[in-house]
Structures are given as structure tokens and as C-alpha cells.
Length: 265
Image (cartoon, rainbow, N blue to C red; front, top):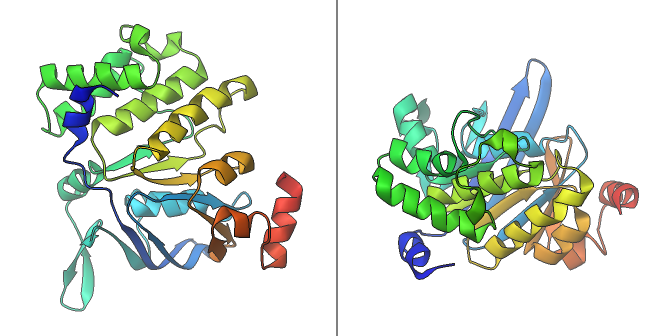
């Protein structure tokens, strides 16, 4: 990372994420069932679990893309998406929620790049839209971040001209451009051809060594073993167990965890 990028990111405070007794359901289907989770600053937390277990919904609740029916999320002590009103929680305005989301990076499964914008403008757009940087400064930062993810030669390209792995690396640079305190990754390699997975995982590994707080939903068990400070196994909307990778992946306490790992290892 260049000295300029380091200076631009120097004021970022690695976030503490706290999920307090979160319940979420759709109709009669309970997707999250009393989830409590604390992610410490600069920690890399990997969330594992079978399809439909609530992993992606939990990430979306953290940045208030999904509103929990019960419970709340706080980041660095600030409630996300709500404020206290007496003994109740009241929804914030959409503008206030968007401001909060500007401090929470989110990398989606399917990239979600703007097809009509160049790679450079995709990365620079959010800092400009949120008023964090002027356009020249945002483009300068975007160039540095694209260099960091190995795409310095693709600034003028459009998303359709890139491979899936390249698009996901652009999406990571875009998340970094907001200088977030935490970055959430929702199965960042699931939409990629197998030969492209490694290039995206390499970028995330680099982030993990930089001190950014990361929460990653993935099925890449070897990657989780290598990168995670803590592994969380979730099933049926509940956290079954959590701990260091050596404990959860090599010596899980619960039969449900052992059964899941036997199918994916």
C-alpha cells in the first residue's frame, strides 16, 4: 500500500461489532433466533453454516439492510438503524441509516457494480456521494486501491469487460474507498469459477493482515483455517459454537458442527 493510501486510511478506527439477541423472521419462518455475537476490533471472524442457516441474513442485519424484529446491533457503541426512544427502539431516517452504512463496507456475492461506470468511477463513486471526498481526491484514492487489489491497468474498463474475479476485486476496492471500520463479506467467492477463487482470497488475506475488522461468510474451510481469529458455526438461526479455528474446525464440541464439517472438508 502506498504512503498516500496509508494516510487516507489513517483515521479509520477498527470497529467493534455487537449483535444483541437478534431475531429475524419472514412470515412464520424464523431465520435468526436470538443471536448474540461480539466481533472485536481488528478481528477476522469467519461464519460457517449450511445453506439457509441465517449467515447472510446476519450480515444484512449488521448493516441494517434487514431490520430485526427483536434485538439490535451496535458498532463502536452506536446503535445501527435505530435510536432509543424511552424504553423502545425507533427506526432512524433513511438518510441517517445511509450515513451509518457509509462506515460499514459490504462485499456481495454477485459484485453489484454499476455497469454504466468505469472501474475507476465504481470505486470513486461512494466517497463522492457521501461527501467524504471531492472527485479528484476520490479518484486518486480509487487508483491507489485498485493498484492494491492488482487492477491498476483496468481503471478505464467497464465491469462487463472483466472476469468475475476481477469484478469482485473491484468490489473490495469499492468497499475500502469508504474507509469503513468493518467490512462484511457475503460468500465473496461463491459466484466465481474455481480458477478465479484464489485471486479474491489473496486480496482478503492482505486485508486481514492490515488490521481491518472483517466478518466473512464463506464455505472455504481451508481459507477459514488460515485467516480467521475466530470461527462461528451457525445453524437454524442459532450460533451453535464459536472459537479459534483449531478448536472449531479440528475439535468441535457439538455433533451438528461435526456433521457439517464432515460434508465440506
